[in-house]
Length: 197
Ligand code: AMP
Image (cartoon, rainbow, N blue to C red; front, side):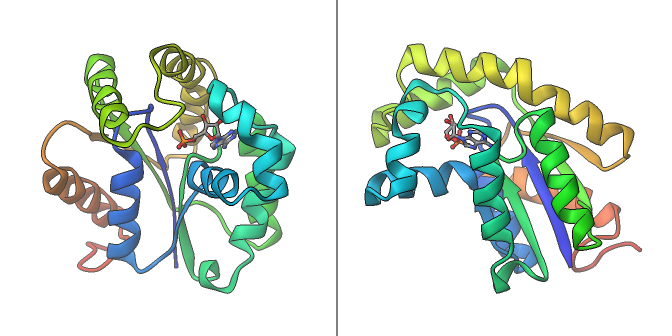
């Protein structure tokens, strides 16, 4: 039963690390960005609703995003834990998630804050743009997404910090090094295999 959230700016590697940590814990990684991109690619009604918003790097409405997450977390594979990536992304979404989890008598066990200097995230996003050609990886859209992160998402860490659940992890290094650091910090909290408590 491990409920985790990974937070970091675009280009911090949170998607990659989120999948690795979820695998290590045997829980599903739930990435709202992936859900939205999948819906756009599949041309579903949800995809049509969010396509222009994602391409501009803006945020999808809190109501729609929270509904998507509630639906996903209600699937049987998330009953015993999950790792959220990219949600909640602002204070209003924290309140939505709190309400949902309280209704299940649950709470987040840990919030992983992946710390990466701005220049490093920009370099990584530019590399991904060259490799994958994501439509929201243009220079202008990247700047918008980083500004939104600093303005709207960084404050959620203060909320979780007051709850004592945030682990700050250095996000610079090899993929394996960073995964090991995250797992060590979670183990220090008594989470996962070989946990101290
Ligand atoms: P990501 O891959 O997490 O950077 O998400 C890609 C895009 O999906 C974002 O730039 C937003 O347009 C949208 N998105 C993902 N998660 C959320 C969220 N929690 N709230 C609003 N929009 C989101």
